[in-house]
Length: 355
Image 1 (cartoon, helix red, strand yellow):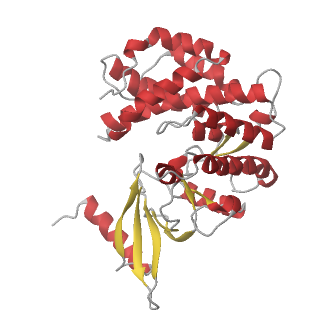
Image 2 (tube, rainbow, N blue to C red; image 1 turned 180 degrees about the vertical axis):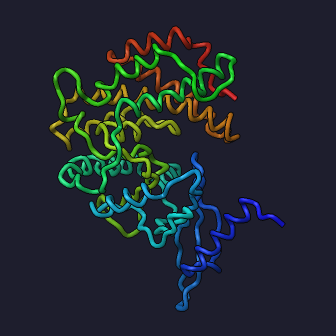
Image 3 (cartoon, rainbow, N blue to C red; image 1 turned 30 degrees about the vertical axis):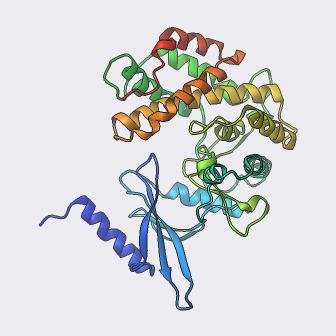
C-alpha cells in the first residue's frame, strides 16, 4: 500500500522523537496558528519521579523554514531575553524540540484577571530595552534579517486587494488583483512608516529588530524568572529590520482583543520616556501609518484563512480591525488613504464576516 504524505510525516516525526529520547512520551496538541506550523507538548517521567516537558514544533519543510526561527531565537538568547531554547533539531524535516515555557500566556493571565497594566508594562519595557540594545550588537544574527521596506509593506498590503476587496465586491478572490492608486498610496506612506518625515531620520525611523507578531498571545510569563527575562517570547521567525514603532503598535493595536485607550496611551508614554531620542510627532505618524498598513494586511489574511484554508475563527475579529483602522485613519498623515477607502469601500461595504 502506498503511504500517504500524512503517513510519511508521522513516520518522520516518530523517528525524530525516538532519536532524541522522546519516542514514548505522551504527546498532545499545544497550539496551531495561522501558518502551517503546529506545536505539541511532550511529557515523560524521569527515574526520580519527576516529569519533564518539551515542545515539539512541527513545520512541514515544503511550507515552512525553521532556519529563521533558529537564527532569531539564538540572537534573542544572546541578548539575554527569554526565547525558547532549541534542544534538538532536524532542519531538513522541519522538526524542533524547544524549551517549554508553560501555559501562562499574557492573554490567559489577563483573562484570569491578572494585572493587565503590569503585563503590558513588561512587554513595553522589553521593547524599549531591545531597541536600545540591538544597534550595539547588530552584527548578530548573521546575516541580519531582511529589511522591512517599501517592497515588503506593499506585498503585505496587497493581501487586502487580493482577498478582502474581491469578496466584498462579489468577485473571485486570489493573488494578482491590481489597483495602481492603492499601490501608489502605500508607497507614498513608506517614509511615514519608516519615520523619515519632516527632515528627521533618527528616532522612530532608526532600524531595529522587528518581531512583527508581538502581542499578548505570543508573550508569556516564564516561571522563576525575573525582570525582562520573565517575559517569554514566541512566534518571532518572521522578524525583519524595520521601524521601532512597529512592535509597540502590534502590541497595543491588537486585532484579537480590545486594549483600553488609557492603557495604550500610558504604554506609548512609557516607551517614549525610555527612548528619549525619539521625536514624538514622527513616532505618532509612523505608528498610525503602520497600524493602517497592518490592519489592511490583516483583513486580507483573515479573509484568506477563511476562503482558502477553511479557518473561519479569525473572522470574528474583522469588526475590531475595521474599528481600529477607522481610528488610525484619522491621523493627518493618512488623509489620502482615508479618502481612497471612503470612496472604494464606504461604510456599508465594510462587512465584518466576508465568507
